[in-house]
Length: 104
Image (cartoon, rainbow, N blue to C red; front, top):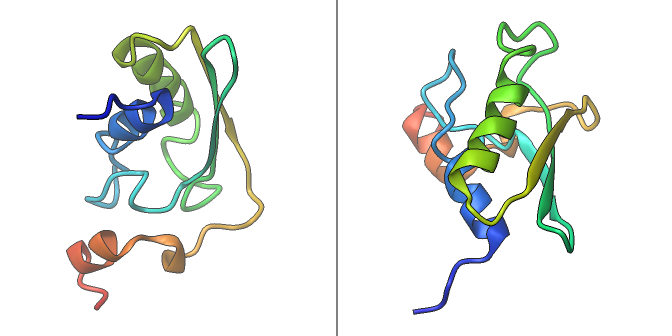
């Protein structure tokens, strides 16, 4: 069996982080735009939120940073940047998320 890459392990962690208002993980919601792992195993995540008024805008990014750093042993540091372009829409959700929310 092939060993997972750091990016795959980070994705596994992101799939355990849920939006507090929607019963779907942030990865399946399409909130994660980019994951970059550099040569020293520092991880940079670019993400958005469902709304600029999201009640966890101040707490969710630091939680993700800590979880990635603590749960993926090869990661040295994790930085999460919240961006607003492109703006998130429900069309960014994967099929499983849409099914979970009854959007099919």
